[in-house]
Image (cartoon, rainbow, N blue to C red; front, side):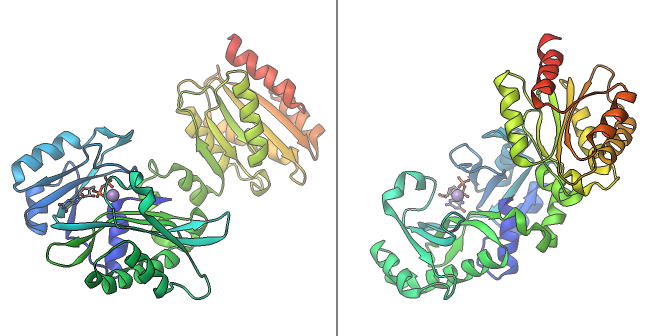
Length: 382
Ligand code: GDP
Ligand code: MN
């Protein structure tokens, strides 16, 4: 999961990094109070989970409060690169002498951590790839100072900045490991006119698999379920769902990531739009309908919902037990009459499951093809 700049900076300040003084504001906060805390001049930075804010007009330098008040009022509630602005960070301005780019990135393919450095940090880093230096960090020995020195020298970084840069790189690597990051990108880290090294912007991505290890992440997820919906379902209810299309017509309750992706492909080939990706993990339900209720409640909010498609391939799960649980959830959530239910089941105790569903007038088949034909009739022909 990606953290907001202000969250990542709060982690850095807990770990004794040099970062500018800052104050988070929303519609209710008064800017004057924030500026009193950070001083002038100051920078206002919209907090969104998308890069390139500077170029998209999401960052502005101010000397006085009134124009900043106006700017913040205009920005909050708008969309920048498709993401809604809800909070703005008011930050002490840094007098920039040079901007550098420093990053650690986890390469899961090659199972290694890469260090990246460029002496041309800032908003145009994407165009400066020829000046990007990288090296693979040894998981056994950690950072190799000789490699860093070599990079700083080849990048023509003035010598008086080397020791501080190397010190910060070490500390960033510690943070990368401690917080199970998949990417930690500092762009820019700034050498100031008064000869200090300051972290001005940070992108921090934490490996979702490590969320159970970091209680503060669970807290962030629960404070912002709309920002981290996928993590919210996983952390609080133990299953995976990704909302793909808020204007889709078919809600999926499916098991197995591969089977679900194949199902989504099959639907889209018929120009039917699934609302969500899902891996409900039917084996873990054990008679408790909560997970299904949570998902059905979310699907119920989609005004274009026409059909619930349940597709379960059960090796060990007892399908009859699953159907009983499903019926409990269905009775509790009460979807509109117009929403059709299509159930495709395959595996253990299918016959009993079929009888149960048919007794409740619900369509059931063990063929994916037949199920999809029925959905097509529901969605395309109606
Ligand atoms: P991004 O566009 O989302 O990556 O946002 P950044 O926080 O990296 O800011 C973009 C650019 O704005 C930086 O590369 C700087 O050039 C400039 N900038 C940001 N903060 C300051 C500051 O405190 N002082 C000055 N002079 N420039 C800043
Ligand atoms: Mn940046």
